Amino acid sequence: MLFSSPLFLFLFFPLATLCVLAAPRRARAWVLLGASFLFYWWGEPTFALLAIASALADYLIGMRVYAAMASPQGGAGRRWLALGVTLNLGLLGVFKYFDFFIDNLNRLLAPAGGPPIAALQIALPIGVSFIVFEKISYLVDISRGLARPAARLRDYLLFVLFFPKLLAGPIVKYRDFAPQLGAHNISVEDVSAGFARFLLGLAKKVLIADSLGHMADQVFGLHPGQLGFGYAWLGLACFTLQIFLDFSAYSDMAIGMARMFGFRLMENFNRPYLAQSFTDFWRRWHISLSTWIRDYLYLPLGGNRLGAARTAVNLWICFLLSGLWHGAQWTFVLWGAYHGLMLSLDKLFWLKAGARLPRVLRTGITLFLLTLGWAIFRASSLEQLQAFAGSLFDPARHGQPLYVSNDVWFALAAATMVSLAPAALDQERLRNALHGARLRPLLSWAVAGAGLLAIGKTVTVVFHPFLYFRF
Image 1 (cartoon, rainbow, N blue to C red):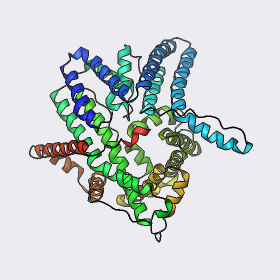
Image 2 (tube, rainbow, N blue to C red; image 1 turned 180 degrees about the horizontal axis):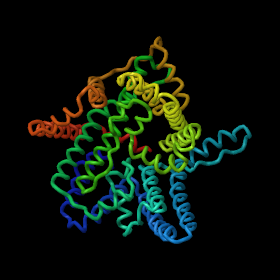
Image 3 (cartoon, one colour; image 1 turned 90 degrees about the vertical axis):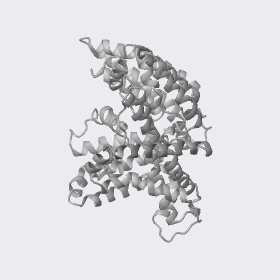
Image 4 (cartoon, one colour; image 1 turned 60 degrees about the vertical axis):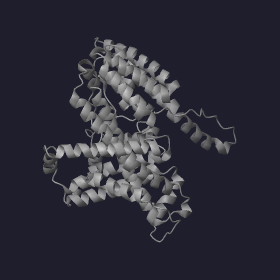
């Protein structure tokens, strides 16, 4: 059930909201849990039951970890933690990586002439990567003494299945989620501000990101011999803006809905295309993922405490795994390696050397290199990437002409303004103006109008899933 689908917009979301608001405060968690289970079961009926069974295992293991870590001998706690992490990674391995491993193993064994190993061919459950990372953080935080086990199984199940963030984050830590379960107050301000944020995300997705995605799909769907220099860069520009608008739109909608239900989720984006280095980019892009990688992978590996060479190795490990987390495909691994390389270069010289350059030049260089990275990310195979790169860097290459509609040009202009315009404005003055009494109603009406336009468009066109649902 997609957030931008008519079924969700006109049936599930209104009913879920009414039921939560009408329920007594003590019963709201139960209502939200029921709605969240129904939401996931609708799209993944088999995995929804498996997710509950896995969450029950986490709940029991978490209590064991807590009891063992509180005793003088913590070895049993570490063993229970290892079991819990292994079970969760096993879920990810079976559903997401098993067939990838078998496919590559068959290619290696093909010269020997033996029969190929059969793949499982299991469909990837939506949101499994996000669910697994949240479940691992729960167990690790208990072992570190940063969180207590969930007081009730209901609380932990709601943490895992909470439908606004279930499919594509933000990745939430239980220690941040649990205190909000106790209060669970919902004010008029929460509902109005949350709904406005939801509408803003819907407008970004339907009115801008989907138009860009249609053009990017056309370009990347062309046969390599049909793709010319200009359309290659047009398609890559569309995808670069699409992935930001699409993913940040989902985050807006998730954060907005969560606030309507009395929960505050962390912000996931902070104007990432204004970054002045790759290090800066990862402080602004998919913040919940980069924070997770830092806390549960980079720092346990040693972070930057063991010298420059070890820091570079740690960065490469983290971002190779980050690339693989995005998908069981060699292009994602290469994308992770590319970011690991750029982050290492940041540490080696760019952060110091770049500081001597004008801010706009640092931002422009970083954005250009990020855009090249998105070509790796978007390519469906290494072969397509090679052919696409040939078109990007051959100005003499002329390919098949494509029709570029006015919607695409509008979306490009709007996405560029949303992504880059704040760099040219005085932030403090803009913030004060938007919060002024005169401009606030105007801004509210603009968001409402864009949201209504987006709702109308969902009825008349085929809706497109969010890009990060596939991860």
